[in-house]
Image (cartoon, rainbow, N blue to C red; front, top):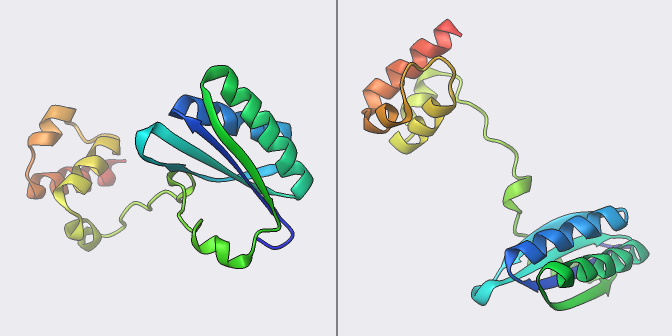
Length: 152
C-alpha cells in the first residue's frame, strides 16, 4: 500500500454503497479494493489509489451515496501503514477468478453433488431441466456431463 491512499465510504444499505463505488470509480483513477458488510445494514466501500485521486473519489462517492441512500461516514487514509493490509486482506467476491471446469473424469468424481448440479446446469446439451437435474443422483450427473462434453 506504499505511496497509495485508502478511501472508505460507509453507507446504510447496499444501494448507497453501490452508487458510492460507481461514482468513485468514475470520478478518478482508483481501484475498488472491495466492500465490507457489517451488521445493521452498514456497508463500507474500500477504494485505493493515489492520494489526490482517492480524495476526489471519496468525495464523489459520498455525494452520490447521500443522494440515493444514507451516508454514514467517509474517510481517506493517505499512505496507510503496511500492517493495515492485514485487516483488508479479504478478497472481494467479485474479483475472485472463475473456477476452472474440471478436465478429467476423476476431477468430476471428486466434486460434490451440489457442485455437479451447478456444473450440469451450466453445461450445454445436458438434456435435462433444472428440476430434473435437482433430482439426479451423482452417477446420473456424471454420466450426463460426460455425454454432453463428448457431443459438444
